[in-house]
Image (cartoon, rainbow over all chains, first blue to last red):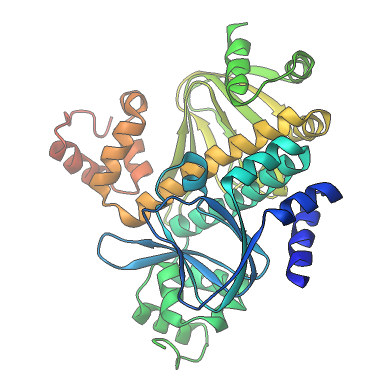
Length: 200
Length: 200
């Protein structure tokens, strides 16, 4: 299956995965196609899986105390994702995960993850480098939130996610930047983007 | 040396460190005592080391565009710290690290870190679990920033850092919460804390 090859390629770029390790993981993968809008994990639930987005697009989002939502990140093709704190600490997830397009995803359980760590050192390397990437991404985003203006953050978003910008309604981008759709509309005019899709 | 034992204990709580691995790390550690106020790493410099705080207290902080500072985290006894993105990606650090008390710290270079990863799988486990802890901490802090009020965040800070709260000037806590010292003063009255040390 092509999607399997995609996953192997993502892992193989991190470190060499011996054949029998890949076979073991493959046997423990669960594949599913989910509809647009499907909620994979709800805020408050325990996350018990690691996911791979083979095709489609996901968002991870917080419910804020004022009843709004805040998109913490988007995951597209070939992204590996989970609710990390929930999976590792066995605590309820602080955020939800929802598909924004019809998507094909693979998953394996936290139990399989622990077995992988015990089986072969390559999985420790994969685990370390993946969480390293997550951490670095979060460190950069924290810095942006604290030291950059909304306009600067919007320009960075367009640079980081040129593709995703065209795939989702604009209010989801406002929810990612932590600004109102109206403010985003103003920013779009300022950076010279068409403004006909702000509240689509 | 007692401080060496502290470090071994911190590492040993993560995974078993074989004797010869510990000996190798020990030989590559550099110990130093630094004065209060010493800047270990400056925003814009390349971070080339991993640090262990044996005694004392450090802060990691951003310089915001309006000329202020924002304390991203505090590290006290037995904390391991570095400017992760800078160390891993070889890019200038986005933040500075400064001692807030006279401190004893140990450090080893990124080169030693890579040698450790190649020497023994225990270091992959240590690396993974440490960055996992960092990531989880950051995930929780991101959520607090986005979904909690300043008062809620202050109460969480007091719970998480009861000790540090008494060791540093109050304006540093305001800089951690992302509020002004005056707002912190109001919060302190509200949660029933003495207010005589707000601008000390």
